Amino acid sequence: MARPQLGDEISKRIIDLIIERDLPPGSPMPTELDLMADIGVSRNSIREAIRALRALGIVEVRHGYGTFVGSAGSEALRTWLLFRTRTPGAGTTGRLRDLLEVREMLETELTRRVARRHRPELISLLRECVRRMRSKGPDSAAADREFHDLICAEAGFDLARELTRLFWDVYRAAEAELGGPAGSAVSTAKRHQAIVDALVAGDADAAEEAVHRHFDEVRKRAKAGKYGGFGAAAPVES
Image 1 (cartoon, rainbow, N blue to C red):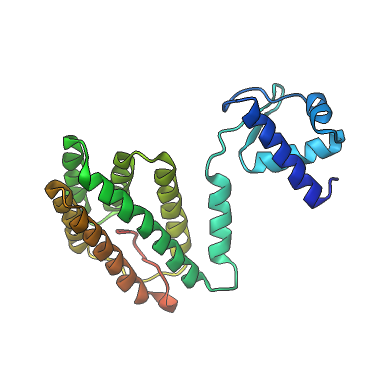
Image 2 (cartoon, rainbow, N blue to C red):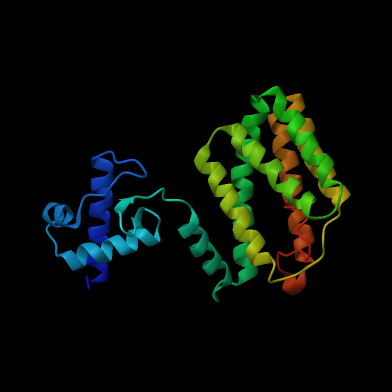
């Protein structure tokens, strides 16, 4: 088995080869023999590195077919974030708070950009989400998530959109363990409507303020939760 430090170096070398050879997701990886020759290490070392890269989604092993370049999705990062929010140390609630703060930073800037320029049809889609939010229940939560995702998509930054989705998923999974008061469907819809109004006006400052007010309310509600944590018994807003 390769030593951890050596294993990390071999993994990095394999990633470099993928980039240097411009291999897109789905492309066949070089064979073990080719990697051994290119990197100058043993077969076992290559296999250990491939296993590590597979866990990160950077390579994909298809049994009976071979090894291919993976899509490097966010699953590995999701697992790490979930683990970090649930392990002792700074405290789960503190880590959830940090997660919410980072998401707010991303969404504030993305919403400012969308306020300056967006497709006319975006407003209709957002208004429909707000309408669905007024009915407390599973579809309200789905509409809430869709609302934020639409804005992130409109901003045109795929990585930022993927990160906000990831933070949403991790926050929801972790907060479910804490419990707390459910938010009002009416107030949730009202805060999201304020964001829509700012976008309609093309006012980036008002859009930023509306996003901050929205997250302030989520934090306020969360502080009343069990253990002073960030949770909601029924996920109706975020």
